[in-house]
Amino acid sequence: MLPARCAPALFGLILSGLMSLLVSAISTLRAAGPGADWLPLWIGAWLTAWLLAFPVVLVVAPLTRRIVQRMVRPA
Image (tube, rainbow, N blue to C red; front, side, top):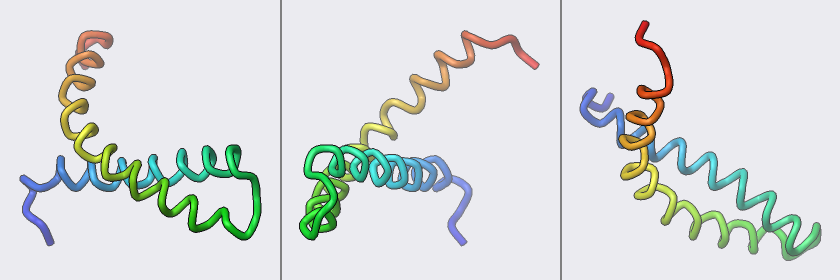
């Protein structure tokens, strides 16, 4: 088990991985079409996207939380 202080980074890692996985699959399928070369193209696109998405999520998440807090009423 990881310590609780790792939760934001772990959340960002998992979220960015899953979102980049899905978006790159759809984008690669639309750009290249289904075929024998689709899987290696998609894996390359996904890994590149994840490498960029993870640090972006870590930087953008606090800003997004502040924006959301300003848009909703306190509980």
